[in-house]
Amino acid sequence: MRILIADDDDYTREGLAESIDWASYGITKVIQARDGEEALRIAMTRKLDIVLTDIRMPRLNGIEFAEKLAGASPDSKLLFMSGYMEVNYLKSAIKLSAVDYIEKPIRIPELEKAIRKTVDTLLQSRMQHDLSDQKLKLERYKLANLLRTKEGDMDEIRRLCEETGFPVNRHYIGLALRFGEEKGEERDHLAEMIDFCARHGFPSVGERSDKGIAHIITAFRRHEEERVELLAGALLGQFPELTIGIGSVSADLSEVGKSCRDALTVLQRSFYQPRVRRFVFNGSRSALPSVRTDVVVEFVRCMKHEPELLPIWINGLCDDLIKDGTQSKERVVSMFSSFAHAMLSEKNGILMGSGRVYQIREVGALLESADSMEEIRRMMLELCETYLEEIRKTSPYSRTVSAVMKYIAAHCGNADLDIRRIAEHLHMSSAHLGMLFKQETGITIKQYINSYRLELAKQLIGNENYKMNEVAQICGYASASYFAKAFKAATNLTPVEYRKSTYR
Image (cartoon, rainbow, N blue to C red; front, side, top):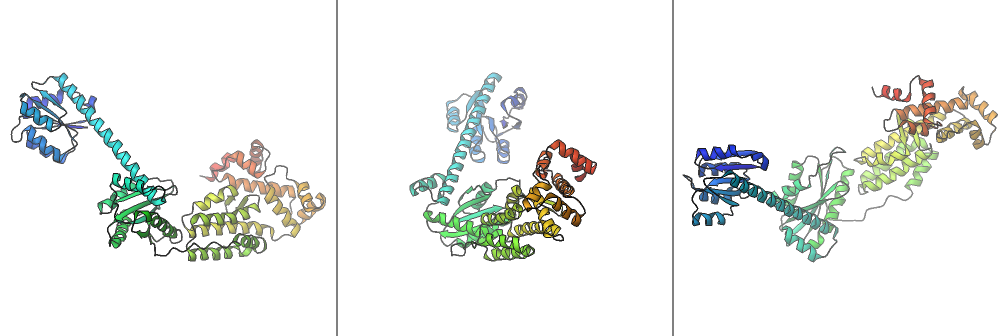
């Protein structure tokens, strides 16, 4: 807090500045003025919390200064001091809402008591202001929510409009806004944007949703619709990371919910057109066409019977979705997650290739993190290529040996996996199966299992998100300690040493 001491007597003024332990009252800055005019100049250029002023001063007396102070710094608390206990001065001090009046010669204990009273009054006033401001913000948020969701009767909406100062008899437009900041960053721009709209002559209320989208409802006079689009352009200039969806015009408060839904609908186009920052509702609201119901079945058929065509199939579907441009991100992510799960389920929930490991538990979150349809396309093509790499590994071999390799890939997490289990699955004898496998590959099935587990472990260790006991379990080692011994025997490094060498 700051205090201004205004007194034409240098001895009194400087003595007070040095005699009081101002810091104990939360006052960090003490400013001095020799007369009323100097005090007024200071008040007009600097924020003052408390003003301790003498009543009798040259050029501009304390009462005249205090009257002008009310316009220059209305929140400052007044504390008068004077050696003239006249009735007129007392009446003036009371009229000016002075916190206290100190008689000269000043006694420090009395002044300290008055300062404490003034500080307490100031803090109480600020607390009440903060509570009032908080209440107003909550009511504006509630109003925005009721208008957007159309929950609550119109009497309640009109009451909130009156209490918050939001216009009743205007036209309205809903804006849906998304910030394209780096993931993990959290900054509430909503209050800034609402203030920005108000400064440009558009009273507004708003709220944030749970999906990183903000909603603003702005009021404007009839025939000012074009100015709203100019406002949107100004917002885009002020906030470079912003993307805006502009809804339909509502001529009544009861229609605002539709405008907000229209704004959200057009904002979804940014998923397909990430370089565009402003989307305007075009006046029609046709039902969203559904994704064809057989698309997952078609994907699975291609995966099983024509896997080499998967990239072409994925590209074609992505092109269709971008051309249509109406499907929500949530729906697209759900559909492609089904495709990814189908591929991963064929490989025991894990796909390994090109230095990357995909796991079924992570693929949904990976796709959800995408900011655009093109990013989902890229992720799915990479996943398809990894799936094809797994298939190509077995393609030079006979059907029987390929079946063994596929079974090992799908069941390597089973610590009891051995030639006997594989032979039972293929309805063959262990001896005959083992002979066929070694003839084609040059190694035994046991050696292939150990090699497969080791390579998978290396890939998983290279990802710091996996703990060593998880790696051991996924790769089918009986225990973490056995995994550590087997890994060191094969690589001459412990799993921890291997990870450190990977992240050098």
